[in-house]
Image: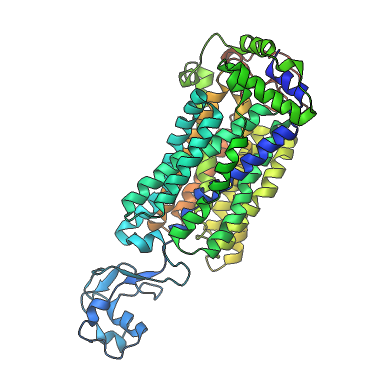
Length: 543
């Protein structure tokens, strides 16, 4: 007997599984909020040097605020005051001839900066003067967070295999909430950066553990539906987040506001079941029997004979492998090395492009709250349409085509004037839509490419390359300081080159999933498993 047989007998997608899915959605609300939090708390408001030191003896007299800036701060090419320079002393002659401002002695800001607080009451930049020479620290905040996510993914993946899904989910809930709340009271940038790393590290458990629990508790035919709902829960949080940010303009209060939803998630944790698969694999048959009988009662109102200890013990013997595989098996043989290289490149390109667009919501000249809301809204049709496209055109064409179209849109926006805000926003939204489609494709595609014996390792390695791409995205955006459009050129190049790499991946539509490394290396004809009608193998259990 296999575990899938038990799921079919107790109803693999009944009230028990729907309750689990609902609890998962509740906890995942905060994820997109924290992942995109720096879009709002790290905004750099308009600023200029603090010139109050010039007026210690009333030298400005009755000058207006605008006149004070003219005589104290050099003007940029567009006529706005310089953000990082000031004259060494007031240049009163500029009141009568402002064109004669070349070669005047200027220096860096002496006494800090004055910020425009009309849109944001407080941001990281205005709190700790993360501008001019320290501008890179402001951008690095996002990278630091996602480096934490990278390490957290590896750590929580291992610990949830050692100590169980439910236990580590509580650890993730509590630690993520604790570190996030403390970060809102940081008294230095260093303290905040460390706590953001720890928040990213801890919050990853909320990202990966409920997804695994859902997959391990539903039958094979319901996995794609569960994956869709799980993915749309992220979109739901993304739609609500800009509304919260619009009402909360202080970075400390905004951090608290997007963290408090973890309180009901922690309360609801008690209703999460442990993974029966994990319990069986670790010899805890009585606990597995308890949860299976509970699920059967909720779904059918009766206890089935297949949940007795003898039946569960037979599953242990049937599913226990004779060899343990590791990440090294991804590079031991030539075709596996090629597959690992191509999926790693694809994940890096998909993630860096998608988040490069997402992090650049101020780069298209439209209100960032509206842009963030639109970006979240377009995920809905993108994620719904990808399931049709996968069957109509196949995995490889959908993956490569969506990346290519993303790159084309990014390339078009390079040549559109910033004065054409509506046109730039429309093209940017199209780029975001196509990038969401590529993200929705890559998870399923990767799970079908790797053989069952190392599918988890393949997915783990590929997703870590994706988070590396996310961490690189804000650094790519820093290239705007070299040339305004350079970051868009880089993202466009990544998307198009990744599309080319994805085109070398094998097609998996309508084919059996590979079971062993030998299936990949020898291209042998796979065993005729039962199909679910969409090209997936019914007995696939490793995703």
